[in-house]
Length: 286
Length: 263
Image (cartoon, rainbow over all chains, first blue to last red; front, top):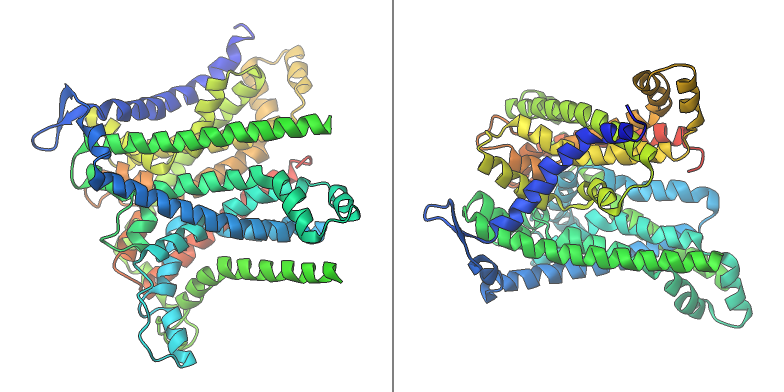
């Protein structure tokens, strides 16, 4: 056995697995999007662009836009909160930072459904927040909190916030405190130093957090289904319906394809940006 | 003076964010021990809702299914992921496409992989059930095991492999008696990670379980129950599920850290 062959031999079983159960099925989705839907929900093997055209039909495209809006809003809120938290953690004494970071990320490790359910417990009509309001003495009518767009945004922010804290903490903890001191010595205020020195150097972390929250949110179907109520639809729910209830797989595949294209575009843009940022940093370090 | 104010502001931010992160799950855990089971009033500490879980056949069946799925997918992905990691690290010069394929399962949105696998199995005419959930979970699990083991291999002393070869050991013996024992903490950490991911995974299981209730997993059961509102039983079940994943992951983290001085 030649020395060069051995590593390939070790890799083969896993590569076969990934090829057969990831690459091929994903390629299948791409192909499926161009077939016609059969009369009784099956697939008719004639080529068509109708499915793709239907995605851009105003009826469906507006769901796309709404999903993007909700994902964008969630990502923006998560970035503000996450950056503030990461900044605060990085400002604490060094020996406490690992523990703080650990507890900031701990909820991320627990079950996604459970974390979403926790908000149903808080927000439902007999939930804790309503009870708290009654207890404080508020008698008036309370707005419907659960099963709304706001509830979906809260749920998404809650679930993905730890991720943003991690992505923002990384560049913040690498900042050289002397740079900040230099800025202050040169007469800049704390706020100016933050805005002109710290923030620009940590933008890649924010961008990473934003892109990941956006990508995870726009295709999400669990949070809208649980916190948005039955009528609420995001692109994930629409895809879900095509595959599991409406039985229009080609249209579901076309929707997924557009969704994947948006996600891939963002992730690749983020990767390029991260690459450039680390390249720039390397040059400075050198 | 300003520094003091800033530090206080930082503490305030930390307080707000940690409250946001922990109040919802704490309320859930607290309510699961509330005798009355309702958020309206605390009527005393009780574990009766946990007892109620043990008499719920649907939940027990789902828990059994989850265990089967998690154990098999962990076993398979630990072997495949470890071998992949060793192969990739020995080879070193890996093309970009290879790295992408190995990294992809960790970032592909669940829903995409889920519908892709559902279409794939249906078109092939594969009857879906626990076995299809298992093979599907292996896809992302093996990537995570591989990542954990590769991190350990970054500071692996390859000269001991040469030494083993020089002393006459075959490739297989070297792998079994030298490489794997050194990697063991990382392999166990990877396996624990895979186990929790599989126990918690909902979307892919939901799509690849097939019709009927026979292969329903715990997250699928929870999803079905949550849609009908809040009950003290779900509170208890949710608390248990959360405890299992946090303990397994903390353990995994610990094992890995002990062996990675550089990190």
